[in-house]
Structure formats: C-alpha cells, structure tokens
Amino acid sequence: MEFRVAVTNEELSKCISQISAWDGKTRLRVEAAMRNGTKDVQRQAKQRVATRTKKLQKSIKSGFSTTRLEGKVYSNVPYAHLVEFGSRATVIRPKKKKALKIPYNGSFTFAKRANIPAKAAHPFMKPAYDYEEPHIIAAVRRAITQK
Image (cartoon, rainbow, N blue to C red; front, side, top):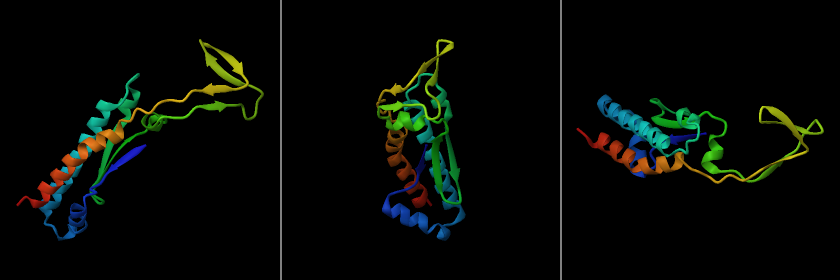
C-alpha cells in the first residue's frame, strides 16, 4: 500500500512541468519542499495509525524520486490496506483438504469453514495526506516564487 505525493494544483503542475527552465537553486528548493512534505505525510500517518503491536506503525516508510519530483509514503506489511480501507465479512473453506487446520491455544483445531467478521476501516494514510497537502502546495509555491 502506498500513497504518492504529487502536486495537483493546476498552476503548480504547470510550473513543475516546465522545470527544465528553472535555475538549479529553484529546482533544489522545490525538491526540498517536496521531500519535506513527503516526510511530513509519513510522520502524520505514523501518528494516526491504529496501534496494537506497533508493527504497522514501524513499517510506514517514505521515499522520494528527484527525477520525477515525486514522493511516496508506503507500508510493506500485508494487512496495511485492510486497516486503511476495512474488509467485509467472508467465509474460508478448505481447497484441497476436508478441514482447515487452525492454530488455537498452542495446539490445533479443525473446522470445515472459518467465519471471518467484517472489520471497520481505520484510515491513516489518506487523512495524513489530506492534512499535509495544503502545506506541501504552499511550500512548493514559496520555493518557486522565492528569489
């Protein structure tokens, strides 16, 4: 699961698309603003995530590409999207065997099916991005207009 931080404001997008016309200092200021904005989204996501074991919170990372002027905030745990978006109720049945082998209290129990209840969404990435987006746009705007 990942979210990309990209400028969506039309006038800023137009300026970024003309990046080759900028001088080196302006490009470095824009890169710094985008990189800092990506780190801020990561920090906000870590603060907003529901923590039970803190594994999901620790897995939230960020990266930045200077060639595409794009930052990303992501988590590599396999259940991150289930926490962010929730899940509906489902029933699991064995595919090749007659019963499911389910670990329970240090031993195993067997069942013909397992009912998995629905889980409510606890978004953390999208609210973090929504909170930081105006700050990122303002920082990029300042970087472009600064002399």
